[in-house]
Structures are given as C-alpha cells and as structure tokens.
Image 1 (cartoon, one colour):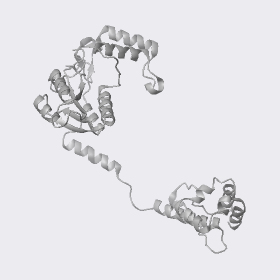
Image 2 (cartoon, rainbow, N blue to C red):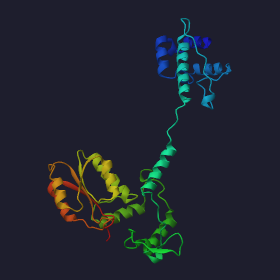
Image 3 (cartoon, rainbow, N blue to C red):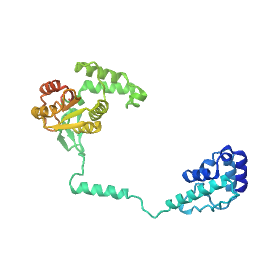
Image 4 (cartoon, helix red, strand yellow):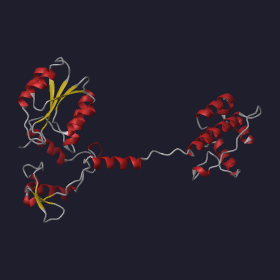
Length: 325
C-alpha cells in the first residue's frame, strides 16, 4: 500500500492537490475506495493489491455479509501519504457499514401485517367474495354460475340495452379482431391511436353535440383523471360534490387536492347555500351524476346548471348510467 500511495502522489492530480486533512474528510463522507476502482491509475493498482492479500476486503462484494472479514486497519503517521490516510478512513467507514448489516435488529414483519389485516376483514365481515357470474349472450339477461345448469337473472349489469349481445356489435368486433388482432398494443403516447378509436370519439362527440371527445380505458379512470387534473391546474378551485357520487369521482376529488364541500343528495337548497359562501370570482366546480347507479335517482340537471351559471361554477356530469337511455 505504501508503494501504491507513492505512485498516486506522483501521478494523480487530485491527490497531489489535496491536503491530508481534506482527504480524511472526504473519506468520512464518501467511499473513496469504491471511487478509486474506476480511476485509470488507482483501479489497476487496487486490483493488484487485492490479489496479493489473502483476506477479503470490505470494498469487495462478499457472497454473505456475515462471512466478510474486516480489513486490517491502516496507521496514520507523518510519513503516510494522503492517499493512504484516505484509504484508512474509507476502510473504517466500510467496517462500520458491515457492522450495521450484521445487526441483530429484525426486519418489519410484512407477512404478519398482511395476515392481521385479512383477519380483521374477516372479523368485521368486510372480506369480499366475488360471485361467479357468466352472462349468456343468447339468453340476456340470464347468466350461469360456476355450473352452466345453475342459471340466474342478472339485475345489476350496466348493459342496460343488451348491446353486449347485439348481432351487429358482435360482428363488428369480430371483423375488427380478424383485421387488427386484440389488445391496444401500447398507450397512445407510445403506439399512437387507430381508426377505431378515432371513429368512436367522433361518434361520441356527434351524439353529445360537442366539438370532440376523448376515450379513456374506463369511466373510473376518466373521472379520476379529469377531476384531479382540473384541481391541479385551476388555482384555488372549490369542488361541490353530491354525497352519493360514485367512488371514482370521490377519488378524483381527493386527488385534486382542492377544497371541497359535500352537498346533500339532489338538494338544490343545500348546494346553493354552499355555493353562496364564496364570491362569484372564486373558481368552482359542481360534480354530480345524471342517474345514480346505487339508488337509481335522477339529478335535476337543468336546475343545477342554472345554479352554476348564477354562481360562476363549472359542472362535471357523470352520465355513465344515462347516455343512450
């Protein structure tokens, strides 16, 4: 190591221009030995030094931490070079790290956490079991359970008009799959979009008398993405949300990080009292549904829009259970 230090003093501009004290400080704050392996001068010299030693070094990669041996300590003297001092400090730091790896402290019990959580779900009867329901295209709204002879009537499907079995829809899907295969093949940002998506968006825009439309992978994603984006982009936005809004809207409002008020379901008086708390100049958004999926109630859309005009608010309407009906 002495010869290694002398060589570095003669060749390395960094070592030549750095004091011993500075090298020690650097060695305490970072692993100079690790960095030295990538130096064109120190790297080969270190490899040669390692090969001449019988014990393992801390700057090597041991297969098992508990079998790694400590590097012998280097003595600091007036004759030692700056490089040797740095190596000693780095070796000491490495030994400290190795000692921490051998700590008797146990890791967090992740499996135990999951087990406890599942146990709690079972205790409070909130552990969810999914029914095996297989809708039969030719017998809508009939479906079979695990066994095909065990048939039930599906009252909770959102395929209200039975378009999932419509012959023209099925044939169009088959023709498209035969021509283009299945799967998106990547996101629009990467793989672009296609004629099918473009035509669908044009149809949706025309149906709703809008300039354009954008298709998401699901209504849940659409609600979350749009509401959270509006909250992030419109400074000081206040959101007024119906208390029976779908979970996707609730998540979107939460992710928007906007100030929010929950108004009573379809209660125009409660909504107006909350809107009146803010000046007309304050940006506002009223989030509601046209047909509520869980209770089947219909919102007074026109009157809510009138309130929005009166108090200077945007409206965000989820019509997933109403469009086409």
